[in-house]
Image (cartoon, helix red, strand yellow):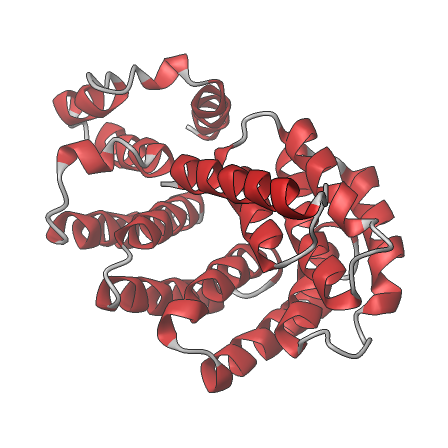
Length: 272
């Protein structure tokens, strides 16, 4: 779906260039494309360079640059580009209180940066404020990315029960609005969190939550992070056949053919 979206954006931009001659447009479509590219890319450096062009553009307004900076911080976190995170913060921090910058965007920017490079207590406070603002002002479907970002932050900066509560709410809303990709992602997050903290029974319960959705095996294999989390549960329970079935996926290539999955597997092996 993300690939098809990016192809459509390319077609739209081609038509715009033909009709107006413009080469770069800073609009909401660009922000959506940057977010999509973050989901698609394995080359984090290329994705980050593309995003920084938007962050640093003097032609874009403050709101647009802050929203692009949020994506840039996420990509930089994925790639371990801590120096770039600092650069983005110095560039954008003076803009977060500018007219047109929304409260959720200001809180998201400060939350993500401080979770990795700043004050973790401040990050947790920003996350709690963001959750409250989202609950008051956003419809359920639009709360999903906020809850996902806050669950990641609170896993690092908050209390364990806070993270679990966020995951529960995220899963509930995702299922209600039939966003099963998000439901799979939160199951993955919760299983890893609970397994890391030794709450193995609760991790098993999250596996059962996903199984009760009765999604197809083909769909499950597209969620490689969840597959690795489930393999972790199956190995602990000595369910070797189930673990082997997920590791050697017949229609998408084995997990060990994916370098990102291999990196996550190496981290998992060290934990075990």
